[in-house]
Image 1 (cartoon, rainbow, N blue to C red):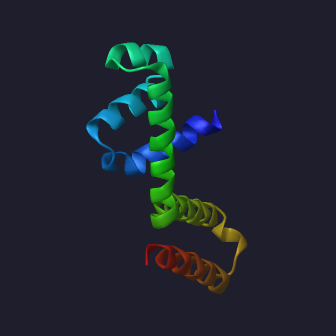
Image 2 (image 1 turned 90 degrees about the vertical axis):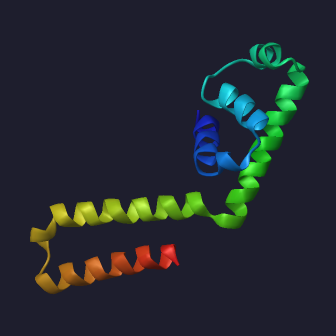
Length: 115
């Protein structure tokens, strides 16, 4: 299951950088959960060709992530946003100064991720 989630995230962030043919086959495998045989029959290529294309596309998408870090940055910012939400729900436990400092620290982390 984790592999499918990773492939989905990679495709969501970088899928537009693939060719139409690559996108069609990758979507069929990852989003439509079609078998290699079904995809091969639909696209007129061999089952091995489908397997190789999916593997190559995944490698390409991982390469983009290795260079651009968009998913890592997105997940870090999402984590910081959740921390802000948690902080806002428990603000009564902190003094004003502690609350203000925690907000500043989290916002600094978010700004650092965006630069």
